[in-house]
Image (cartoon, rainbow, N blue to C red; front, side, top):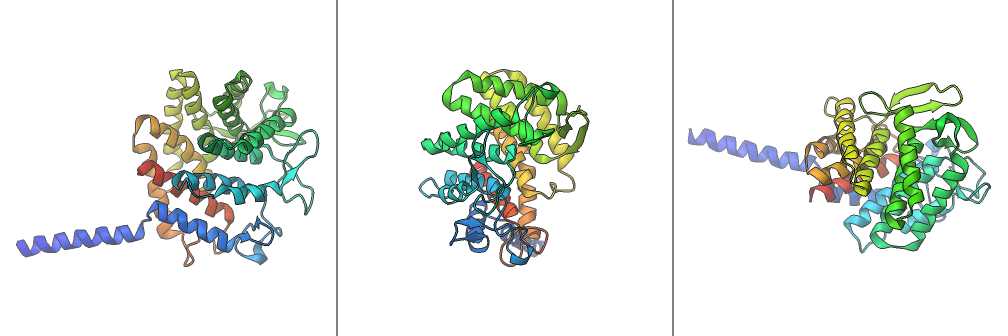
Length: 358
């Protein structure tokens, strides 16, 4: 019997060691991803990034802006972990190469300005503003606040009207779609600006956008549809994790600034519905960065009630990705060609999980 028990103990200890080897140390994983991004996607001669790690598979010479929207937030989370290190300035300098002064107001276009004129998307700009405002609340560097205000002015001037009762368009100059992915982060930009300036105009816009989005794009269970078409008002009922995340986080920030419990109650309703709908078979949907945005909302809820349920399923998915969707060069993604946005999305997830779990 004693020998059998000894074998059982050895088996359990061995299993624990093997499990520890397979699952990542989140901070180590984040540092490794940073290193790999610089090695496989960064171009030192221009200060820009490529879309993938394969020259023949890149749609352009350099990355679209969208992956940098993910990378700048991941860089911010790395500075949360290591405040003495500078992760953001290099990415911010790359983003400046997408700056466009075109009327009606300055903003960032979706491709490198020196290479061609291109479109400007409100959500691309908003994700950047969110990361900059997160950074500003940490380090009070004026440039981050100035850039965020620039983006706010652009989204109001070029993206907001009274068609369909209000709401922000998705793409400048194309007045045919108002999306949760432009209104959810629009609410967050306004709320973050309100937090740092205490100017009522920001809270007023946030509440207006919040009301409009709930009226036109919220599903009965609390999740959010993708878009409403203009002028038909037909709703695209596709559900994405990042729309759940931005609106969950919006409720949490509204609860923080107003102390009105209705926003916390609504956050719980969205959180329950989000986990039920998106977490199936031990995994989240395959877009890592969309899931990173959803984690932001759950992280805000976790900081209030410390309920591990809100974080545990993100850990399970992140551990699975590290075991199953990582190649021999420690690049992440299910396809042979690896994408910058996937590396950036997982950078944010691992950095956030480390900070939440420490």
